[in-house]
Image (cartoon, rainbow, N blue to C red; front, top):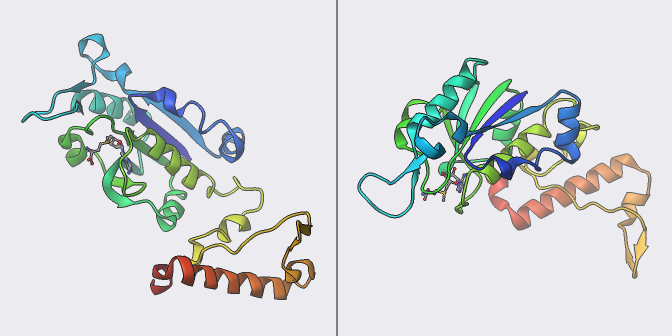
Length: 225
Ligand code: SAM
């Protein structure tokens, strides 16, 4: 999978893809992430990419022209399955969305900044709008990093044990069960005996019960679905 990201602050994305699982995905050639500096695509003086909003008001707006220039230069190289604008008023990112996007070949993520991007770009070029939650970030870069992580770890071959992703929270509309590791006892707190039993059927049953109980307690809305 290839993910291109258009950003006005590309430095914010220097590190998130250079460690741990996403680093391995890139090294294995399963995920390619390319960050494009919007300022490289403007024809305005002093690399200007934003301007005052028509109608007045606080904050700047990213101009349509550099965004279209960046998009069209990327589209000369490949066709995108989705052109996604990260925005607080988009559909909320969730596990089913990440699952579906992990099967795509080419994604383009657009990061807004300041007050956002010119609505005409959203109307005419964006195919999907995604929020990472009901709060406002300064820019779309951290949201893009969250999306790439959520999607990238699901690409077949990225996780060493692919069944691991299937037992995570939100797969099957359940939260994950509690997990423990060595030592068996710490300050008198013992690991549940069933996990030490070696009986895989009992362990699976216990984990399922724990998942259901935790979901009922913390996210009963998931069970409604
Ligand atoms: N004026 C916009 C509004 O109230 O909806 C917020 C603009 S925000 C300060 C700047 C940029 O950060 C947005 O254009 C978007 O790309 C990104 N952003 C902020 N919050 C986000 C969220 N919850 N999910 C995804 N992107 C977000």
